[in-house]
Image (cartoon, rainbow, N blue to C red; front, top):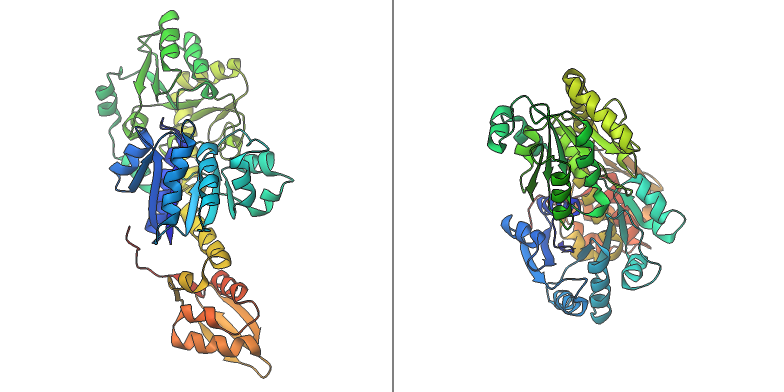
Amino acid sequence: MKILVTISDQVWGGKHRYMLDTAHGIRAAGHAVRVVAEQDGMAAAEFERLGFDVTVVPSFADDPSTAAAALTAHLGEPDGPHVVCVTGRHDAAAMNIARSRSACDPLVVFYRHSAFALADAGDARELLDRADLVVATSEEQLERQFGGTDAWSRSVVITSGVDRRFVEAVSDLDTTAARAALGIAEDSFVFTVLARLSWEKAVERAVRAMEHVGESVDETTLLVAGDGPERKRLEELAHELNLTDRVRFLGHVTDVAPVLAASDAVLLTSVVEETGPLALKEAMAAAKPVIASRTGGIPEFVENGVSGFLVSDDKELVDVMNNLWCDPVQAAAVGRAAQAAVLGGHLLEHRMRYLDECLNRHALRKLALEEVLAEFSWSTVRWRDERDSGFVFVPRTSAISELPLSVYQPLKTVLAQQTPAALAQLPVPDVRQLAEHLFDMGALVRSAQVVSG
């Protein structure tokens, strides 16, 4: 399938990392991915660097009409997208305008990364209300933003996941060398913030905490890896508190692996309901203890005192930071537990497999069935005639289904011909439901050939 992903916000953040991983995952599954991102932004540059077909548009927020015109052009192309994925309220609003101007009716996937609910009216809300699939990024977010609404029935939770290759990359790095490259004292206990420097991340809390955690750069250091509108104010705060030697601002960091290799613990001091920050999971995967605000979806994957620490106020933050740097043995033990938790349940490959299943299932429900089925193959399927029915069995999944003769007989012919696309022409009451049932059984699988583009 051809999939169009829209990315808003020029400053690189956790949402973009999540969507970059998602784009990689769906492309690896055989889908053709095109990205529409804001011009002069970090997202556009990063997607282009990694080989994606990127269309740049003016800011979705500041110039929605021009951005919507570009999206309308994409929807109107002869080989236009089968699926559009929107990732924020501004690009969603532009996509809704584009859809209203186009005859194209793609499958709409609406990602909600934000801690804040959408407004009750407007183009973004209108697109959410007509979206085929709504993706929440934590159970807490799903309940808070969509509980009791129609969107609930169309929603799935797909949390962030860590790429196994990232874990291997961090483990291959030498801590001493990583610290030397950053100019950090070898014996200093290094706390690190990996976040966009905006008000909701409340990085000020981490900076102020350093007044009470250690007394010199030889004891404790704070690295701030990220950029954003709060950076200048935070740098001024560090200067006012005489912490310029112990609080280091690294700016935007594309590859966080060397920073994590140099770190002893990672902080996230947000004051909003975070959904499921990938930065925390990557830190955990690198065997670093994390200290995070007890908010949003974070408690869904950080077990307090076991795989990390959850704090509710500034005093707790300072206390936990002091306990960690004074007890490196405990810090290492919590880091190992954190790594085990991520490797056991938060790998990207599992998330992408589930997403691909969701996309395929919804495509079978909505898109031109013969075109969708052309991208599928039959798994090994066995069948057996009965007097008044027939059985279909998939050895790979052990799924078995008994079908009435009116469905079984024509299906058996298609199975024998090894032509899934012919399924669309079967003279049965609800061929889409049958196709979805066969997909759920594991009888229909996407072809291994990767679609170019």
